View 1 (tube, rainbow, N blue to C red):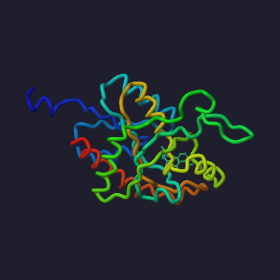
View 2 (cartoon, rainbow, N blue to C red):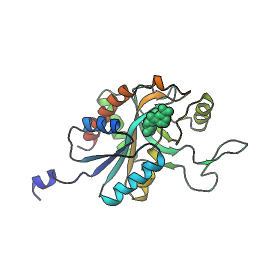
View 3 (cartoon, rainbow, N blue to C red):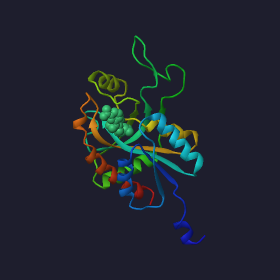
View 4 (spheres, helix red, strand yellow):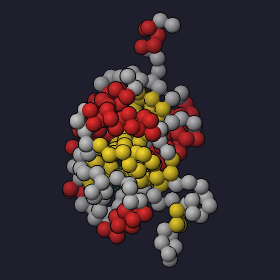
Length: 223
Ligand SMILES: O=C(O)c1cccc(C(=O)CC[C@H]2O[C@@H](n3cnc4c(=O)[nH]cnc43)[C@H](O)[C@@H]2O)c1
């Protein structure tokens, strides 16, 4: 096959972001790389799952990445740092009880987590460090509701002591990828601390700047 045919091939890696500002930041970092296609999920795990499944049903991809901004847990991920998922966890999938939250696996109803491609997660972590980012490889929680109280923050930190971040789409994207037998990664840059709701304290601009660096690092991981 001629070199030009490789150059004009379709993108093989799908990056799902929730909103346009995240998509644009990643695309700036990708700097025109033809290997990647960036698409929107909308906000939340259900839209994320449905839109990722639609993309995977209508195009052929070899890898799926969920990228965006996130809340960081205190002492685990500072604002403007980056978290690469070592596990993608549906933190609110289960049942409440008088004795506390019962995750779906304790109910005999399947697993609340999807494992990402750990080899690629480690490579991405190293590339980001090489580009000067502050990076943590740790579980990322997915919740349909942004945590906004000390009480919920404490409950989550007790249930998931190694988790570094929470966001709203990762598990949806990951389940769609898993059902399509395509490996997945989740990578998030931290816009705010998980805790009592204080929207004015969110540093979206800084997190988007870091997301641009994630785009650059991804081109190096797949170079
Ligand atoms: O201002 C609000 O009340 C509000 C309510 C729901 C969602 C939002 C967003 O702006 C979410 C956008 C996007 O960002 C991710 N994200 C960022 N920080 C967090 C967090 O602390 N907890 C969960 N998700 C977070 C999320 O993945 C959304 O897609 C605003």
